Image 1 (cartoon, one colour):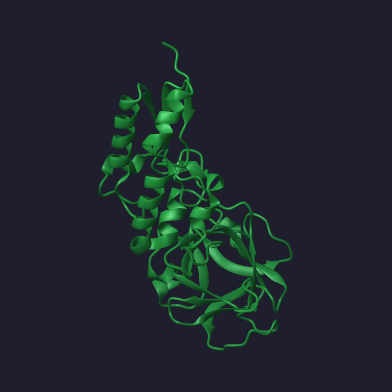
Image 2 (image 1 turned 120 degrees about the vertical axis):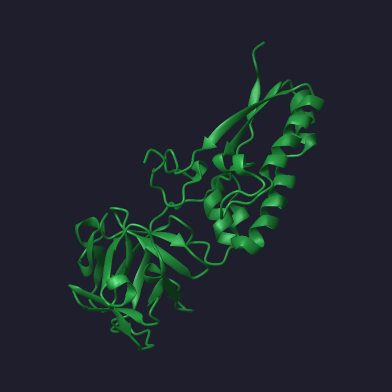
Length: 282
């Protein structure tokens, strides 16, 4: 028998374009995982760049910004981040955190690769960046970027002040949603979404309109429910179980679509990607 079905996207795999309001209460919601940013020194009017795309020092000698001048965020908290460069290394302090020179050589981030982005209250695209050593990044010259500044000025001439450019569009998937709210708020946000977005009444209406199947995208983390790896939230498997019950109650079939593969198969929101890179094949 042929199936006449509808796709229930954004239910068990979030896709922000379908319901942007899900992200509204996230602090710094424009700085989620995978957001691509460019950083210009206001003093030198030059962009930060990872030499050779990664594996070397961070410099500040570019008049315009492209790939090597773009950094992808890994969100650690509302204001703390890792910065990933073009060749996938992470920005950090040299000598495993004991030095103050800024480099991009680490393949996996730890404390030396942790940075706090401090935004100006009047102009949130004007920022200062605090390193894990408690000091601010400063541009001493076009070839010297260090984390050893203790000043507090927001003047354009200050070597620790940067102009933030956010590359649009940004990722708005399940990873960004759950990690953006964090472990304290995300479980309730997701439960509310799952319980309200699709209900048994929707199945009844679909059946009455002549549909005899639904397609439900799921993410790889559902296989580890109710304790999926962070930042994903447990409970999606029970929601899928409800979908099977509702479908049976109304004479419908369920097509389960593995929509998000670990490591991301395409770098898009709906693949559960953290930063847009495709790494599942690795």
